[in-house]
Structure formats: structure tokens, C-alpha cells
Amino acid sequence: MDRYRGNAEAVKNLVRGHAVHRDVYVDKEVFDLEMEQLFPNSWVYVGHESQLKDPGDYITSKIGHQPILISRHKNGTIHVLHNRCPHKGVKIASEPCGNTGKFFRCPYHAWSFKTDGSLLAIPLKKGYEGTGFDNDRAKDGLPRVENVHIYRGFIFARLSDTGLSFEDYFGDSLSTIDNMVDRSPKGEVEIIAAPIRYMHTCNWKMLVDNQTDTCHPMVAHESSAGTAVSVWEREKHRFTETPMAVQLYAPFMSPYEFYESAGIRVWPNGHGHSGVSGSIHQDYDDVDGYLEMMVEAYGETRAREILGDIRHNTLYFPNVMVKGPVGILRNFIPVAVDRTLVESWAFRLVGAPDKIYERALMYNRFINAPTSIVGHDDLEMYERAQEGLLSDANEWINLRRLYEEGEPEDVTEVVNGTSERQMRNTFYAWRKFMVQGMEQKQEVSA
Image (cartoon, rainbow, N blue to C red; front, side, top):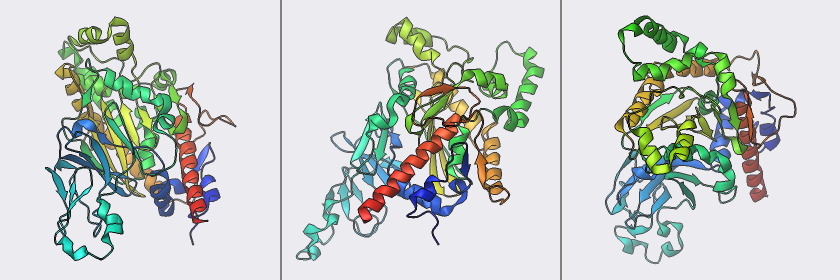
């Protein structure tokens, strides 16, 4: 018997503010509802326009379970399409990226489509004459996703025809993307390399929770980053300067007091970030010539303001993390209730010294890769949590740290940096968009 399908009240009761029920992580029915209601009703990141430099370039993505195809048309426009042939439903593009030339061709029966999705040709089309094909949806080609917004090169899409506008959904949280892009002297970032891509055997929200969890680094990473720091302390007398690698991993051993004072900011609709007044990125060595480039581009006051904004992790609800000072974006793509594909992208700041991009690539390898100094620790914790939540001893996950009864939702606030406020903020948004989607579906059915 379904416990949650068609029961918006039961879904609402999974979130209590100070606690969430384990089913949000382990129940397949809840996961299926997320794919049907949460993701289609949210603005979801699907790619960056620098991945589509030339006509015919394409990338593939997913919104929930929906396969998506993003392409650059011959007139330069970008189109977000459903990656499904209108004939037999075969995926048109199966690779993460490529160039299709002047048209897409279905590998099954050779139906072909222009790069804006419109139908180009069907073999033996005379076989459809007099069949009513002209009144069929298939004649329109690949269905388009109509709600698309490109913000400073970042492509977002919403499948649902109703919901918050892009501006209302993200609001002031877009300042993190602004800061990352503004770190380029030319105000432009680009992707020029493949991401680190690997599977996590856990629910996607475990990765989301971890982005603003500041009470775990000095514990979970003690045996890895902590050991590396100890080796550095022993050997640093041999060096005249601190290697870039040490600058990247050493801050993970910062004490609780450091994170408390750094702060967390929450925004409406589930967005938020750690590192308000300080972060683990604050003490990197200056790169020769970079400040001068920035001052020339923006003026000294604005340049220092941009570089002084050192936010740690910004979560864009539902499933994207942006690390502005380092130029990293991580996409947590749900595959199953206990499987999540992670893509970790490093962005190049156009016009900035190469050493800035080198730092982004090194950070990605040292922190986010499955063989990294740091990332594999997190993965082990996710896997242990996914298994531990199967215990019937307690069905609730505790999120009570620095919780206050009646805590407001959908507000902008700055709080103690070790608070679990942003985790709660995520679940307030999760509950809101899940329930809205379910209620809208019930209204349509009625």
C-alpha cells in the first residue's frame, strides 16, 4: 500500500524542522515522488553555455528522471529539449557531450531533427500520408522545455509550466554566481575540461546536507587531511613557501571556533551558504599580477570587494553546490534512492592568470575526487549513513543544533557557522515544493 503517493499531508509530516524522518533518504516511494514533483517544479542547473561554443554542439543532462538534451542551433540560440525521439522514444543523444553537425538523427529509425528540435525528415514519409500524422505531437519533433533561463552563462530549466519565476526562485542567492564570474577580469568563466564524475552509493540529499555541515571536517577528515597536516608540520622547515596543495587541504583541520565565527547565511527556497565573514579559502597565496588585472578591470575598491567575498559552499536548491572563490560547481544527480552521480566541474576565469585555473583543478583532484585526500572520507560517511538509517531504533534524523522553536522559513538570515540551520532550510524548501507539486497534481486529477 502506498504511504505517500497522493497523501500530501504524510509527505509534509516527514519534516518537523528540528528533525526529518529517515524515509526522506531511504524510501523509494519518496524518491519517486521527488523525481515526479520536486525536480520538475524547481529550477535545475543543466549546463553552461561555454560547453556549447559552436553550432551543433550539445550536452546531455537530467531533471529528475527526465533525460534532457541542450544544443546550440545554427543561429546561435540555445535550446533545452527532451532527449526522446517522438517515434519510439529512443534517446537521441547518449553521450555527455559532442557535436551533431547540422541535425540530430535517431539511431533506431533515422528520424532526423534540426538542432532547435524541430522535425527535419522521416524516411519513407509517404507511409504516414492519410494517417492523421499531421495532427500528431510527433510532427513537432523533439519537445522543448519552455522555461529556460541563462544567467551569466549558467543554464537553468524548469519542466513545470507553473511555479516561481527564475528571479523569485533564486533571489539574492545569485550573488554567489555573480562573485564567481566577476573574479574573471573579463567577467566571464568557461568550462574547458571534462568533470570528475563518479557514483556515490547514497541518497542525493546526503551530499546536499554535507555542503554546510561545518562540524564534520575536523572529525571525518582527521585521518586524511589531519595526517597530511602533521606531515607538513614535520617537514615544512625544508620549504621556503607553503605548497598550493597544503594551502588547499590544511584548512579542513580548522577548529570549531573558526567555523562558528565564519557564519552561515540562509536564503528563501532552500538556498544558503557557509563562510559569511571567513572561510577555508581565505588564506591562499596571492597570484602574481592577478590583483593588478582585477583593479584595471573593476577599479581598486570593487576589485577588493570581489576578491574579499570568500564564501565557502553555496547550495542552490535542490542539488547544486557552487564554490565561488575556487571556481568549482558540483552537481548531485539522483539516480536511485541510494545512488547519486556526482559531477564536479572546474571553471576557468577568462583573462586571469593560469595559476588560478591550476588551483581550481588541483582543488578538484585533492578535495572532490574519489581518490582525493578529503572526498573519500565523506563518501564513507554517506555510505555508513545510508546503511545505518535502516536501523529501526530511531526513525528520525536529529537537526536540532542551534534550533529555535518557531524558526522562520523562507527568510534571509545570518547565523552561527556551526548551526544546522541551512540543513533545516533545505528541508523546509523540500517540503514546500514537494507538497505544492502533489497538490497541483491532485487539482488537475480532480
